[in-house]
Length: 39
Image (cartoon, rainbow, N blue to C red; front, side, top):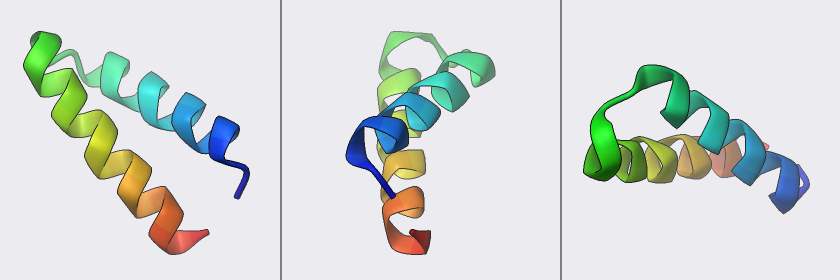
């Protein structure tokens, strides 16, 4: 998967969950890692 799209999807998912600033960063990293693992 393209890294740009991976970051975009991870960012969107993290923002949708809305855990605040620190939580969003954690969720972004988790989603980014999972997408990299799957793709």
